Amino acid sequence: MHARAVQLFELASTENWALFTTNAVVVETYSVLLARAREGRRVAIAFLDASEASGGALTIERIRIEDESAAAALVRAHTDKKYSLCDASSFVVMERLGITDAISFDRHFREYGRFTIL
Image 1 (cartoon, one colour):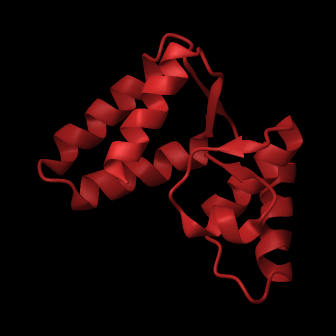
Image 2 (spheres, helix red, strand yellow; image 1 turned 90 degrees about the vertical axis):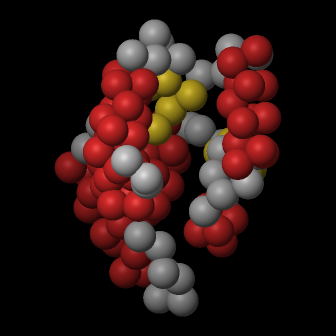
Image 3 (cartoon, one colour; image 1 turned 135 degrees about the horizontal axis):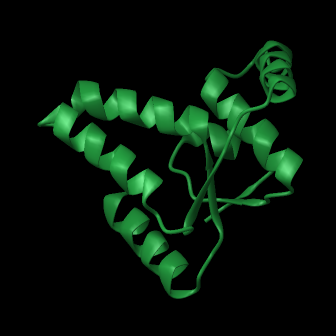
C-alpha cells in the first residue's frame, strides 16, 4: 500500500491534481499517528505542519453542520456496513463538492461504491 500511495501522490504532484481532505480526516490522522507511530508526537506534529504548509496543493474542507447530520443519517441507514463517522463525513463532503475520485486504501470507500478508487 505504501508504495502505491507514494506513486499516486507523485502522480498528483506531477499532474497538479486538486487534492482535498476534510478537517475530520486531519484530526483522525493526527490521532492515529500520535498513538501508533514510532516517535508519535513528532510524526503527528510533522503531519500537521505538512498539512498546513501544502502551498495550496491540499485543500482542507471543513465539515459543515449539515454534513454531520447527513453523515450520521448515512451510518444509521447503512445497517450492513461499519463506516466510521469520519468515513461517512468524507462521503458526504465528496458528494457535496462533486468529487468522484478518491485516493483511499480504506475498504469502506469501495464498499460505499459511489467513487472511483485510484
